[in-house]
Length: 420
Ligand SMILES: [Fe+2]
Image (cartoon, rainbow, N blue to C red; front, side):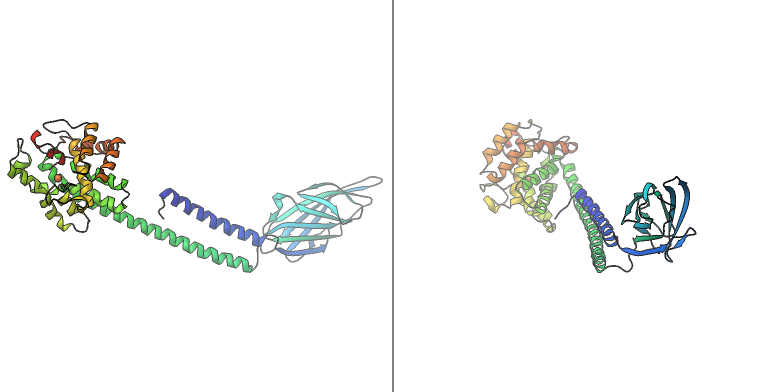
């Protein structure tokens, strides 16, 4: 499956979030309501040791007395000396029956069980760490002078000793997940490096080809940009024919090098302004065979040699150099043949302007089944109609100065459309 960079980054981000949240919730699930201990002791004004780990003090800070009742303010502090933090704690303070609560702070308090005041922490002191303390207090009214007897404190520890089986399983799974995830990242990185290397190889191939094409251009400046345009038209036809990415790439290379054999045609013939003699025409036509020979060494790029050799064959078998017919002409050569002819028709010549869009379409359709493979003509005509060809011309504009084709006379038409 091929992912674009944004999707890949998003997936990595989501995976990291999933790992973090799973870990967090396992921690929460495993820690919730794990009773650390219950501590209980009788209260004294000098402080009550509930256990070695939890200590409580109580102060009577204010007291008022009327004929019928006594109002007393009590302040409590609980000290945490356990190994971890205490959370979701709760305390019960035993008081006289009939006592009513008038006020409270730092905690929610209520009378329960006929004689106990239940203390539930406010959210801000729900949890307190080792070495810290919480304070709370209340004012109660009672019929006579009251003294709380006993305090019961229940602390729920957030620190789980050892670990549950479930917790261990989840952590092992998380570990495996993390290792796989890192493996996925590393392999993605390697793949990117490999792709980068592949891109670099393609760059080197293209640079070599462009260097070679510049030799051809130097020999015949009127064809400047021709090979690049043909390569782009041919690759687009291949794409629209749903050929594989590798095939499209190879057809592009084949288009770039289809006229490589021109390098062996003497300059005097290639640039001759007048009518060509039969011998000169033969010399130009021989660029196909020469190209085929030159590119024989390039066997690792499939179809390059055949395209140079056969791009002037005609579908009806009247082309050159071998007079191949129909589908016995290699597919790349048939595609490049159409692209080559389109470029020749749409380029200016020394002796005439380029043909207009309708003229070109007419000319190509006339050649369908005789000069060109009809199934390829359809794609070329579509590319002309939907404007793709103009995109190619714009993209290759810098190569187009002096664009034209061979210096042939009008007598050579329609051969000139073939670009020779
Ligand atoms: Fe050619």
